[in-house]
Image 1: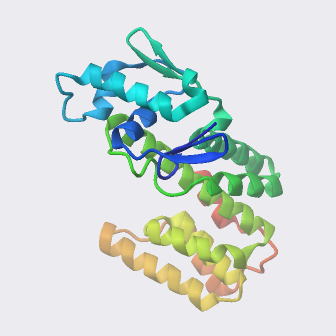
Image 2 (image 1 turned 60 degrees about the vertical axis):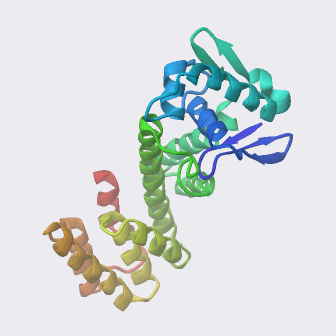
Image 3 (image 1 turned 60 degrees about the horizontal axis):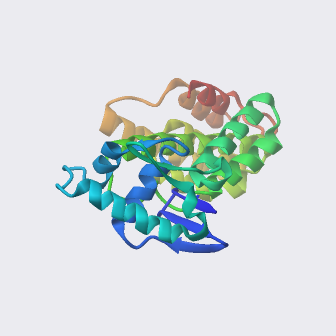
Length: 261
C-alpha cells in the first residue's frame, strides 16, 4: 500500500496506481493522511470537505464517503477504522510519500552537518525525487491542508538548498545548473539559491553568466524590496570579480548562507 500526497493525490494497491476521481474522496483521504494513525474527528473532516460549512446531511455524507473510500482501498479497507467521534487511517511512515520525504530530509540534513557529503547528496536527491508537483494539488485547500502544504514546501526548499550545497562541495557544478535555474525562477528573491547558481556557473567557466545572475537579482531586490543583496552574496560577487575562487575550495559564502537558514 502506498499513499502519495506530493503532487496529485493517489494510492497504490497491490502495485496498481489508483487515482481518486471524486474530489470528496481525495479530500477525505488527504484529511486522514494529515493525521496518520490518529483519530480525525467528524468536525475536522466536515471542515475539510465543506470549508464554507457542511450541509444538514454532512455526517451521513461522510459515512457514505468513508464507505466508498474503503471500497477503493480494497484489501486494505480495514486500515480505515471507525472510532467514537471520527475515523482513523493506519499507515506506516514508509507508505506515505510526505512522511518518507520528511524522514529522508532529516537524514540528509544530519549527514550534511556531520560532513558525510556523499550520503547527504544521495539521500536528499531521493527525498526531492518523491515530489511530483505541489502538495495535494488536486484537492481544494482548507486551513489544515494549507498549513501542511506550506510546511512541506518549506522543507522541500530547504532540502533543495542543502542538496545544492552538497553538490558544490562534491564539485558537481555543471550538472546542477539546470535545476538551480528552475529553482531561482520559482524563488526569484532567494539569495541562497542565487549564490549556489553563481558558484556553479563560475566554477563551470561561465563567469559572465554568474555576474548576470547577481545583477538581475540585485535589480529585482531593489525594485521589489528596496534593499541591496545581503553581505554574504555581495562578498561572493566581489571574490568572483577578483578571481579569488579557485574551484578547489569550499567557499565560505554558501556555507554562511546555509547556516543562516
